Image: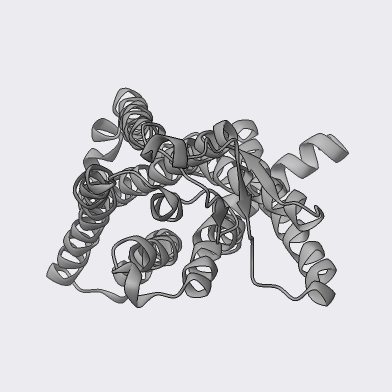
Length: 312
């Protein structure tokens, strides 16, 4: 009887954002502009780092990978959101939902690990400036990025495979704008205790461990500065680390609020809004944070623009 009562779900319905119908076109234009800004901004950073030899350093190598991750992370959810805002039936196939969940976890985790690599790079640059080029060798930089890709692949694949084994009954409405793992677990009519255990253990480690490593790096940087206090040293440290720290606080603040706080304390609308912060707003702001406060990026933009446009 239990098997006959279960219906095979072939697609899910995404409720999207809680927007009134008369305001939908306005928000569609806003989200489209934000997505285009994200794509163009991050592509610009990648191109500048690739074209300008002055930016061929470990810090900008990690930044180019972070920009690629931001570009893909936003592209996992935004095109689907924009399409569903113009659709009468905002649906996504079952296989498409699992695929979206996999790449959402993959690029979200990848950004987290890349932020750790960037924090370590800043730690070495400030605390061991004379040994910086020796420690941050090309081999180490490539190894850190490769390790980040491998770890995120296995973590995203683990959650996707665990989700694929679950059964979904009659209810196929997801109160979100993408296939969020917690929203899918609430729809399942199977036992989700294993999934929840993996989320709070391995998933928690993937979020908390990088965050603690970043905090440790900045604590060591602060301790190193305070040992030899000088206005110039403090100003140099903040100019070097300020951009990265801003991105870390913006990204981890919203991620921890959504996934490490009990879901019972957060309404669906609140979780959706906070998810917009790290899936849409953060990838869009990163190019501005890293370029507007960075003289090297401004200089590279001028040199590349002059060379390619005016041949000077």
